[in-house]
Image (cartoon, rainbow, N blue to C red; front, top):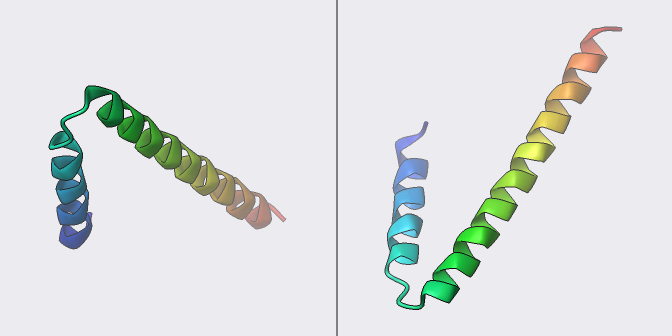
Length: 56
């Protein structure tokens, strides 16, 4: 993984960790996970499309 991406992710994790409200922290983490799941779904879909196109 590119070091600059890791640093940005680590900064975000630190920022989220500094949230005082437990409820807000849970909401933020749930949103981050939702967005990451969606991105992963998109990438997997793109991979399937790419693999299917090679089969022809």
